[in-house]
Amino acid sequence: MLSWGHPLAQLMLSCGPALAQLMLSCGPALASADVQLWTSLGSADAQLWTSLGSADAQLWTSLGSADAQLWTSLGSADAQLWNTLGSGYINVLNSLKNTDTQLWNSLGSANAQLVPHWLSQCSAFENFGPAGVNLWNSIVPADPKLCTSLFTR
Image: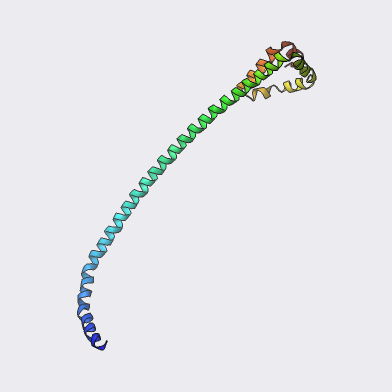
């Protein structure tokens, strides 16, 4: 170690000024390269965020469009469903009236007190929209005598 120490110390002493000179001469270049590196990274970063923002905007726009289409199709399907249910209900009432007149008439008699109150709330039918109006319009002409006697509007 003692034999190595002197040459190593001599080497360090001899290299020291040269190393210091190297660092001094390279420092500005390294600093300049560092500035360029960060500048280019900053620029790339800005471009990255800009492109991500653009992609994000496109994503939300397409999702919004898909969402609008979904709700439109659901609304359309819902309208079709209610129209089908209304039509089915009318068919049931007509079938009941046509196949069992006695039952229909007894139902009318049993509900003689209830029905006028029910039908005094005619707006309830209107709340169901076209299906409710169609239902009301089909009930009235289906049995004019019953409707005239019980369902006075």
